[in-house]
Amino acid sequence: MRLEFVKADGLSTASDGIAALIFESGPLTDGAQRLDELSGGAVSRAMAAAAFTGAKGKTMELIAPAEGIRRALFVGAGEAKGFDDKAAETAAAEAYNALKTSGVKTLRLAFKGRTAGEAAHAGLGVTLAAYRFDRYRTKEKPEKKPTIEVVEIAVDDVAAAKAAFAPLSALADGVIFTRDLVSEPANILYPEEFARRVKALEPMGLKVEILGEAEMAKLGMGSLLGVGQGSVRESQLAVIQWMGAADPKAQPIAFVGKGVCFDTGGISLKPADGMEDMIWDMGGAGAVAGLMHALAGRKAKVNAIGILGLVENMPDGAAYRPGDILTSMSGQTIEVINTDAEGRLVLADAVWYCQDRFKPKFMIDLATLTGAIVVALGHDMAGMYSNDEALAANLLKASEASGDTLWRMPLQASYDKNLDSLAADMKNTGGRPGGSITAALFIQRFTNGVPWAHLDIAAIAWKKPSSAPTIPDGATGFGVRLLNDLVAANYED
Image 1 (cartoon, rainbow, N blue to C red):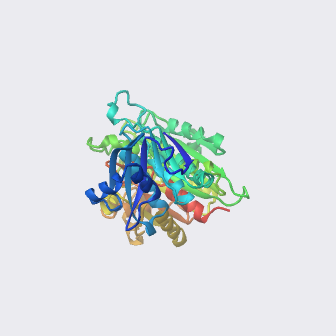
Image 2 (cartoon, rainbow, N blue to C red):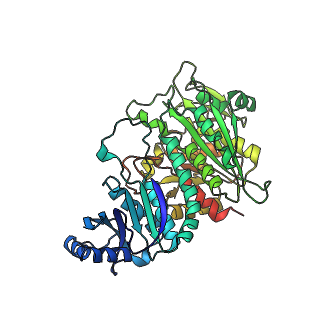
Image 3 (spheres, one colour):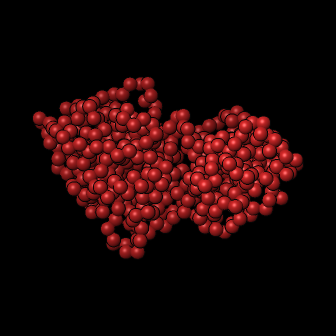
């Protein structure tokens, strides 16, 4: 699909598909009014007959309402005074979704009279809604294939809309990069391949280092390496640097991602039902990679580090076992109680390496970490834990702005004792009660006092079915928008 911003011209060069906003308690918008005139009042009559008021989330479609127009869609936008950038995104995505398999090839979104920012966000909404992971489909029924080839956003000031869309385009590219990574099957995207795809981003201005098992062994990363020792695929640590601040030596901010490219549970084998979903257990690393893509794409004025711990957790004869004791890079020892509590073991070494080498202002880790967070919060938000009030407050503000929803969870110190071990410095699980909390407390032991937040995204890295118009079923790209907004609002020069 190609996206274009075009001059609003009263539909004099209308495409074969038109989408116009309808507001509650107000006159018809310019596009709807013009189409009503062209159709001899068919729009007004249809609205009355269908009791269509312009309520949010509602649409009304007319077939061949005027010469040269195959379909006309009217998208409920609610009250005009409440319409903003987010609403523009949603409305544009709803329009695309409603007409994507209709036979329409060129869809025009009528945004005459709206701001350049709203038009730009409409472009973002359409771009995200149009995402498909279809590279392995060899057969598909024609009626299921999108027919829309071009989306035109008709706006008063084309140049301003294009300028406003530029950073959003970079953001969309980052989200799509993440969705592609998370969607790939594990036989295609294993740790070394993940690392190669990140390394391929260097022409964007990113510096990418890849550490293999030999390099990690020299650093003492026994925790991360323990998880991957049962796989024929070599574990990797990807280190991504974006130095966009005016001072290239300024203290960076840092993001760490769990990248378990496939998780069988290891010796503590998962049930077969649903195990195929574990291709997305690298969603945290995928989000960090997408964020770094977005920051480089829009030339963000910040120094940022991305660390990806990339492993497979397999039940080979060489796999680590319950009862094993691992020595982490920090020197702390860990008794393995459950090999399916592997993500925190990966993060233990990745987080320690991050703070030890880069001395960041703060670290944020993202991980599809626990089923407990799904039980606690359902599938529409991620759990956030933090040892720093300012960082937590900034994340919650970014959550509201981006639509990547967070809920702050308690980092309850009294639960820390649940991690105590008779044989080692700690156990890798604190049991079922408060399982997401004790997982966060485990990771906190490797932060070395650096301001830090942990985002448990197990509930929201993958959605099927998805009810969000900008998120097709499957990989969501959760975290990229959140962290991009966090950086833009608080940490750029």
